[in-house]
Amino acid sequence: MRPPAHGGNQALDLKIGSMCVSEERKLEILLLTSRGDTETEKQARKFLATCRNPFELHHFAEEYDWDGDLKPVLHLIRNPSVDAATLLFLYWYGCPEYYYSKSRFPFRFGIGEERLVYKILLDIEKRYLSGQYGSASISFDPAYQINEMDRHDLFPRKIPREMTKPV
Image 1 (cartoon, rainbow, N blue to C red):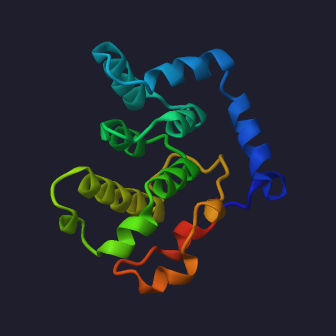
Image 2 (cartoon, one colour):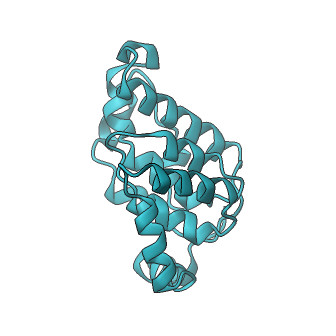
């Protein structure tokens, strides 16, 4: 794992990363995150399957709302160019403290969306811990997302320490 660029200034790192994506391209990506239009969803799937720019993928992750369709999140985490910080961002956006504090296994959540989110968290964890990401050029510090660090040892499923460290 590399040390954070710029002395760990996450805001500066994200600003520099976002400069790699033009304002016009950011708008195009933002439009891909909207739902309800079959053509837009088709374009989003194509983008997630073919995009090789980790900064664009990270921008998609920051803009996408998980409520409803989780398939784009699955496509995103399986993209070979996804950055380590994007995986970590998505992991904490998925609320592992909530899920892991409730159960050690996803089947306890029935067959709905909560079960799928749990499985996504497990998939992200596996990929992140085994180094299955395209780069580590974006910084992310999950410290601001962690609410129950002092209770992690009490959870039925433990959050690996590596998932709590900045990248």
